[in-house]
Length: 225
Image (cartoon, rainbow, N blue to C red; front, side, top):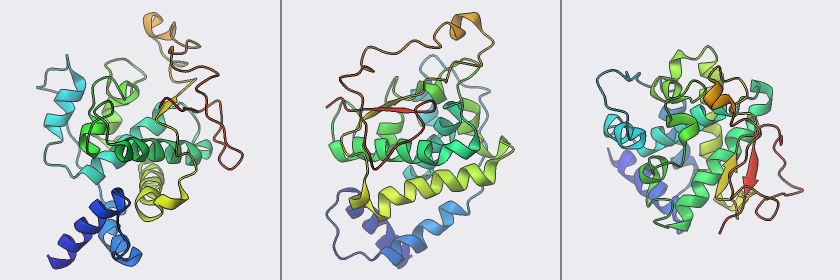
């Protein structure tokens, strides 16, 4: 119990960038359970989905913030509609974006990891009710055939934001966009959005870095603050 309390204390401190005393090895021990976790599957049945984020928050009320974030990275990576071989930088980009929103401590993004994840209309690539959204994968990651590889990738990406916050390669980024998210939709009303960008995703806000270059067909990064 004392190690759990210390580990949680370290996590909170490291997320706020105020920790000089907590040791990396202690955090690694505390996070090991998450990497090896077989996440519980939750059903969509029996819930009202008019507000998917609110419903998801209720379903996940007893799930730790760290697992919720890992589930989101897992689902959002799949929502990019890219092959597994291209997902390493995608999942890392998602993890750092969540980290940057957490660091911003802004009501615009939500305060605290769960509030950030379940902020209304922020991660509809996972939570929306259409065919290429990855809500089922968020609710039940183990249902994916590549679960172990993808969960490990999602965990590794999230772990970087905890253990090596100073290595953040995309500090200004608060948003990302998946150019091919809608590509394989079977619904004409949804498929029409393929190739359409939101107003905030433009050349002025596009973030590029010579040190961090995820595949642009998979994910585009934006500096909106």
